[in-house]
Length: 143
Image (tube, rainbow, N blue to C red; front, side):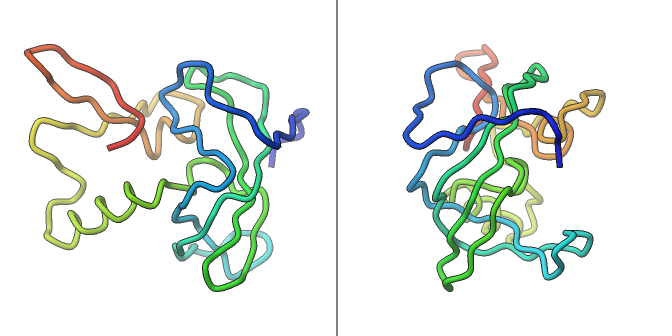
C-alpha cells in the first residue's frame, strides 16, 4: 500500500481525461478478493458494487491511482482494492466470454496496449484499448 496522502471521495465525478477507467460509487464491477489478509495469494474474482474510493494524488502519467471499497454480491466486503484489480462488470464479462472462446483478449479492430516501461501498475498490467476508426487510432479506457 502507498503511504502517500489520499483523498476520500463521496460523490466525485470524472472531470479530467484519463486512460484509466474511473469507477464511481454504485458502479457494478468484478473485483479481486484474496483469501489472505496480506493479499499474497492468488485472488479470485467476484461481482460487486463500488461503495467508495480513495485517490492517491500521485499522477503517474495515466491518472491518479484509485483504491476501491467493494461490497460483493455474496455479502462480503473488501476495502482498498487497487484500481488494476477492479473492472466494470460489462468489461469483465466481455473479456471472460472472449477468453472462454479461446481468443485471449483479442478483438477485431481493437488491441489491448500495455506500457511495460511504466511505473504505473495499471498501465503495465491491465492497459487500455486502441481502436482504428477511419484509419486513425483512438484510445479508450473500456471496451
